[in-house]
Image (cartoon, rainbow, N blue to C red; front, top):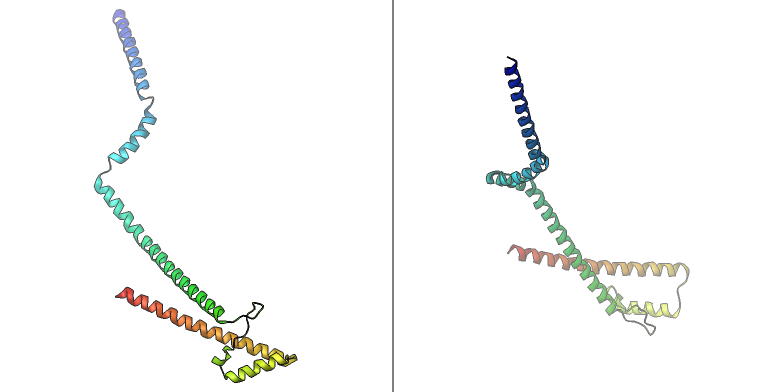
Length: 183
């Protein structure tokens, strides 16, 4: 019986050496498994997702983001329109100012002088007489202040009228543009 036990032990030792050899071979084979699994995951991600699932995800994303993109585009269009109107207004204002400067005569020193536009607002002879008397004798004290205030008011009113005329022209242009766009 002892010989049968020794044969069993010898057989068990042989099996253990084979098992140990197998474990070493297996260990060497799976040593690179963590890196290999991460590489295979990314490959699997792109290769194993079915096309209908991708299409459904794209549609969902488009439905979710689409309204926000449209809203942002509308805002951008409105802002561009505002800026275009502002540019047109500034161009019109520059034209108005250029027109004002071209109509105001200059004296010998190159300074602007009052051109007698007051005839547009009142009696030309009265305005000329007032200028002549103001040139001959300077106003003093309270009369000078009143004259300055009246002159400033007159200039402000002229500017307001010209600005309102420009605004009317601008509104007419905008209305024409809108009508052209609708037709």
